[in-house]
Length: 431
Image (cartoon, rainbow, N blue to C red; front, side, top):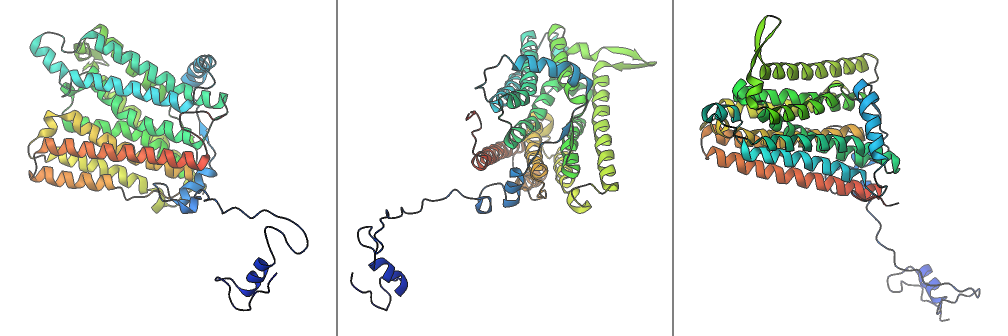
């Protein structure tokens, strides 16, 4: 072979040029033969190259995540889990757990949508008193009760199906609890219609009622964010069964049943008021127990975050409901009073997004990010609504649609990123 010149040859160093000149048709001076190396294929992005919703630290945290929870509820341990296990044993092994979760969520969406058509303003009891007829047909309540039961059972079977098919993953937990955060608002609207809570509470009290109900679920994940362990509340399964019972009772009687006055400890109390008080007590109980466990972790120095980092999720939660309650209080056109479910749904969507981000932070053991564009959008809407600069109902609907689109995009994006990271499919079991 010709001797390579000592200067650069086609941009190569003299040494590389000589090595190239000593190779002819795959043959080398020592008589060996090798195939030319193929061009390097593009590698999959690593966590450090992430450009989506999840940060590098969050992706690395999901790779190291291990599920830790405590469920010692007698109702769950001795009644529901054996029942769910028996049901799951009859399911096909190809059925993905996340598909069970999603179908259960759609059951709740269908029930809330159906009741929205008949009771958009949470005034079904008032309308029944005026018309002296059933505003909502009995079959609607029964169908909603059946959907509630199906949703709860599917939500209980998904984890057992995941362990049965050896398809458990961090995505399954995030997918399950993320949808649960939105289910809470849907069930709240359904139950509020079933007991005619709009006649018992003023709208500002209904929004505060939603805040307290949401606080119970949020406190559980806030606790895990700080302690690393999830303690499932005893009231969760009991509340799910209670919602179904309320819907069936309303279907076989009427909404008026919950407004009958009864004697309790010498006081005359309507059933709907008793329902509200029990719900308040349940939310406060969950909050107190979670706070006590966080305090114990701080005292024993086993908490995962310091005070400034550990309290950040509480700031977003408080800011959300402060904005919603302020809008209701100082509304220029009082549209909140006429279309309460629109504002409940708006608050529920943003709450679900904040909760999903909290779940991501507690599962990946990363710092919760305070910045949330939805809160900024809500703040702008509140300013415009209070000032009367924009028709309030149209403003609320547009804000709700925008927030819903952002939340769905966030959910799909996070699921896709985790599927790519874990090399799995959301609704299909690979093996």
